[in-house]
Length: 533
Image (cartoon, rainbow, N blue to C red; front, side, top):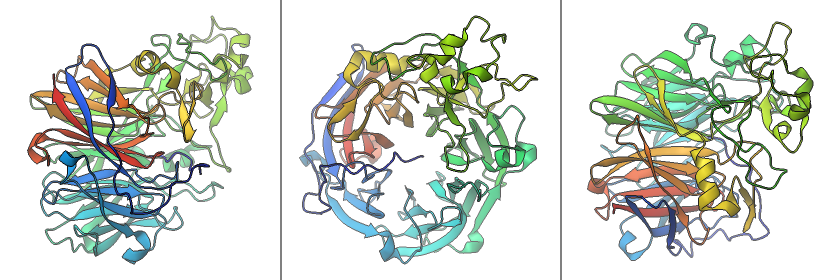
């Protein structure tokens, strides 16, 4: 869950509690045959400076009708009142600052609600991110109950459905000089009804080299660095509380964690998608929508992961954002044109491609690629360019983690028709949409995915971090998903959806399905009411 670089806008919003909610807006939906109706009920504005991550991850407790939002700008936890949504309000009830918890740390990265005992857990990286971090347990009002030490850089956490365990993805990123590189790990914490958790209740599990198959892509300057670069990102837990599934984004894999044994039982490579079969826009310099086929492979590299159960079978859904290692001490990231001479033009992929195509700085040569990949011939030359992210969402069979569906080029094609002025854009300055600026990188960047049921059908909601807006697919038949709609607020006030939370009708304060979408750049949370047409 990488944070967009924090950008201070010339238009700085005041950090104040005087306006605890913002005006709900009408919604633009694209999808002529959609069966889903979307309305924005309310919006929360953290009143932090644009680009400073005023809202990142949001979680909901039905018993107290409260939402908990991570405020990265202020190193705080915002507690929001969900009981007044029918009046279009999402007020701030209380703000808990990290410094007031009495816990040493640099940030708060994630929050989860224990839905049975109604306390919360937050993950707190150490002041030096390469040191071990903390998970703190707080009561419903944000008061500290207990804390335990976990692995380096805890980045996401979630409770099991029976509320007996908390699973933490400890990312373990290196420092910028690449001189310290802690192991990524997974912490399993046995919890109880009081939230008074002892260190002996927490077990941090590390990977072993024998669990990593050779087809998992290499990352780093040597095998040891590659092993250390297994960096757990995001967690989902099956409905039977048997397995947790954790994305290993940079190395393009998923780990399977046995919740009974507290053991990593499998790491699965996600493979590659071929852009000879799918189209892609590869350049930000042509200033146009230009979807074509190329001799190119893409790593899926999911960030968010969710699950669903259909006819007794568990399926995984991934948001294939993409990510690279790009540090002062080591970077895998370059452009195809910059290493054009290092490709084997006689390889199966490139035999019909000229060196001029690879060097074209307004075309394929402009695309970012990795120098740390598995497709190398005996002479050390790359046999195919490999780029970051799948620009899609995927569905996998949880049993073997094999791919059964990928949305291919849908997201770029749909946004090109639905919101062409924002195609593959970024908005790092308030009000400025940089058209086509992300085509050379990771395109629309699908960041997060959740599933939910509306009137007997199961839908996937996928947030596009750069373009903004949310894709909706009917995934009732996981092998044949159907695009339903792409939506965003008309005033463009919600930029860069980072976290999504689905609330079913049973637990909703309005008794209808809701979607909470927290937006990193704008520092806002939008509450959407969902119904079927």
